[in-house]
Image 1: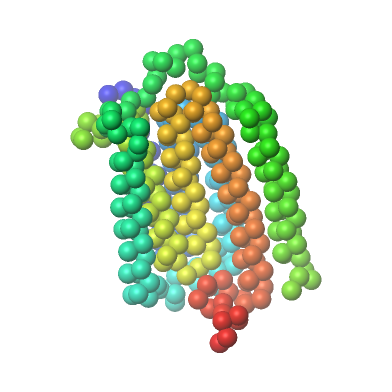
Image 2: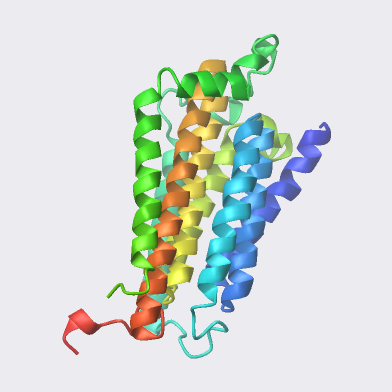
Length: 178
Length: 112
């Protein structure tokens, strides 16, 4: 067991605890802050997966951007403490059923991945040895050339979409909008 | 099975199970929250679970799939940012008209 194995489970626990807080905390501010912990934990998991660039972008866009937007959104809520709008019994049952169904199906899918079944999923190890000398394929430089080569059209479409979305968001919050 | 949980970061299974739990918690959040912003948090949880799956699968398939998976994850992150911007603009518009963002109390088109 090496250092990364020792660090992995605390990061995984932080992610899970943050997600549980985001899903179950009645106080919306606590829920938003737990979501922040969860997003930071996912960024840590990206580091374990050797996706450093994605981890940095996760911290900048999610924790630095989306989480702040959500915290602003919480201010529009009348019932931040969640005292008057407890979910009904039917709502709780429905949510629990949806959660159980989603976890059963996703865990089942995770255990039945085609192509990995023959080797046994528990045996799939990281191909670190075969990666020596290939680490540069994972660098931001390589990701950038992928974006401007094989993924050029989706990249341009995404740029147009972001422009449209930001103009639309401005239009929605205009003073004279209905 | 136990040694999978001891091995940690070098195996695929822990990431898949984590992503599955994250996704389920997102579903629970979407199904139980009555507040528009809480609803949005559930959606972000689900998007993160999908992203984690992308990157984990790519990582354990080799170098080139790993890079492709990371590009896909970057696209998802950008789309999530766009979605959050529009959703918060909608929350603001709803707040201005109804003075509340409780999804159960917004029922003007509902007839009562």
